[in-house]
Amino acid sequence: MTPETQTAECSTSPDERAIQYGFSSDLNGILTLPSVKVDTDRPCLVILNAGILHKAGPSRLHVRLARAAAMRGLPAFRFDFAGVGDSPPRKDGRTLSDGVLVDIAETFDFLESKIGVSRFILAGLCSGADNSLRAARGDSRVVGAALLDPTVHRTPKWYLNHYLPRLRSRERMNHLLSLENVNPKQIQDLLRRSFKRSSEKERPELFRTGLSDKYDIARHIEETIQRGCHLFYGFTGGWSNYYNYPGQLRDLYPNLSRPALIHLTHYPETGHTFQTTEDRNRLIQDLTDWFELVALAPKARQS
Amino acid sequence: MNPFFMGPERKRLYGLYHPPVLRGPGGKGVVLCNPLGSESSRAHRSFRILSDSLARSGWHVLRFDYRGTGDSAGDVDSVTLNDWVEDIGVAINELRAIAELKGVHLLGLRLGALLATAAGLRHADTQGLILWDPVDLRSQSVLGAQWTGQLDQPVPMDSGGAANVRDFEQMLLEIKKEPRESHSSWPHQALVLGSKLIPDRFRELIGQNLRRMAFEETDAPPPWLEESNFGAGPVSARAIQTISTWTGLAP
Image (cartoon, rainbow over the protein chains, first blue to last red):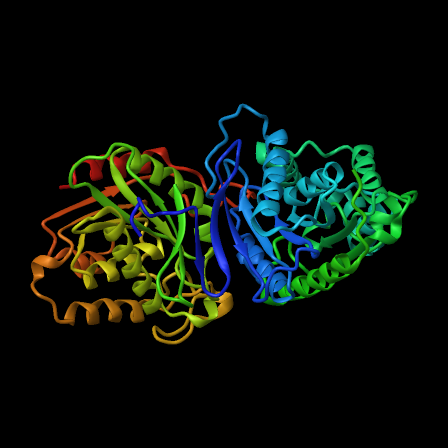
């Protein structure tokens, strides 16, 4: 292929295409098509970047998820936000937080014109989950959003789950209460670790999606489900510093208007990035089953 | 930056071509050879910035993913090291066709440096090698003790994919025995950039036919190690500058 004949799209076996598109910024993505003709009544899966990892996802999670969705008859698209992975930085002066939503909207516009779909399911891990919820709230084309380890807040029960086992340990209590066991070096180490942890809380700009306030998140969820959009929440054991029991989300937000639209799954034995094959397979099975439910649900698009 | 797929059906490789900013007659090209597994994810940003830097210096640059990795077709559990060396050959041919070049340079990071070495010895159109933090051949395995397997056997899924060092040395030796037109077709220059002394064995394997060879030791933070808990390595401006300077002098 010479530069002159280079097009923005080239197909590959069996059904993946490299796409370059975008109006306000050049974006690069991979479209994975089902082996049968695309049913434009069914939604298209769009997978968002997890932090600054490129569009293949951690351990190629996004590649595998896109292929599994296509096997179930759903087209899937995974792309890099401007400035992430293979997409060059944006030049339109928008903030990162705004730019992400523009990139998602332009991706939907492109896919509408390219393959004729008009409904979308978003999926994302970590900051990708937060960005999925932000987009789902504001864009009525989103009929489902799969949120893996999104920003979440602790509940009183979280603290009980976290600290009670420590308090129940006689050995640990004796150790804590016995002054003769106090070791200055241990205290020094503890302080150093605490200091390190606090400095690690500093997150690069790409991780700051602008969605951190508990009540703001509640508003996002409520407005999203009010218009009939389905939400899949998946929390891993790798997120146990924030989420440590299956029903924590329901305890956190007990007054949502349509809780039946929220599918909640807890993966306590799984790491944050689904590193093992078994963990990825289980997640992909759960998600593709849920995609089917969303695809079959009555259209709930509202302006 | 132009994305596309290349190679035969069912072995399609995802590539990104960075055309030179300043085009001149002739031109020079370089194929970038990724490390593997999480090292590849972490180094992705550095490779993109390096590609842009080389393109600004007038180079045709091709980045790509080996089969079963990144955005390319297939799964890693069905590929071998030899497959990945073959993939580099596909990328060499593609870049030569795109840019109408007689030969190209290969730039490999970590295990990609060893794969580039193997491909460079096999492909007469390899003009030079740039080997960035090559995996230490003195170590017991190519990417640590958990990486096991055989050269022509499928790479174990959870290992990230590699063979042990004896297999790799054997592969290089076998490639060197393959019939070729003349030794002058071998890569005739190399830059080895790393934070450790380069093992003698490695020098012996690749260095004996080189007309120009440079070793640059650097203490720059390695792009394939996680900078913090964010899945990306640091972008080493110093290493990129060293590579740009060396390639600027390349014939």
